[in-house]
Length: 267
Image (cartoon, rainbow, N blue to C red; front, side, top):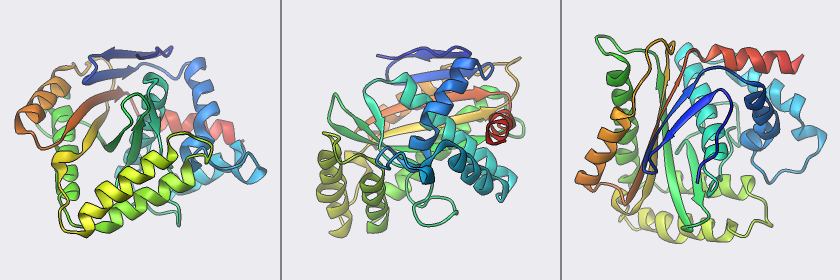
């Protein structure tokens, strides 16, 4: 089941979907205010001044302002993925923090760890963002971004690299409240199943559920269609390189408008 957000059109086909963000509505602003701290730090942290709204805004902007332009787009794209998945899918729970746990650099490993409370399953999520690619239209660029996300996950999920899973487990431990009934289940899957397979040299993408997300930052005078997400999803089904897959495409005119709103909030 999915929910609607004022200012955001969401076309949901279950296995693939499409978001058009027309404007930052009052509802979307309230969603950002309500979720910023839990997105950035995880839901496990106490509601002390250290994790308050204003300090989190300042930390977000400090991290953002020090990055290159491409990394800034990636940060906002990942932030939007956190926000839209959380708000649009009732059964999907983001179980990792947007902020890196140890430093202000980009998080290493997987962009998001998502838990499906209905299926009791883990979904590894990769987000790719950008503007129009050379000699490509909106749909062509969107498909490029989705295929890059796919390639990155195929590579990492087939590497016998235990650090990816250690990072994921640490994020879940730091991000999910101890009282959450799914925390132990989630850690067990990441540790005993996925992490142990990597430690034993048996890591494979074929037993993993994945979510691929593209973010195109271009004016909505020309809109991306659902075709790139649909095509990529159908290709993934044929290739059988993942167990299950969800493909999501997002379009917003600019990444700066989100940052402009956060700057006004930080004053």
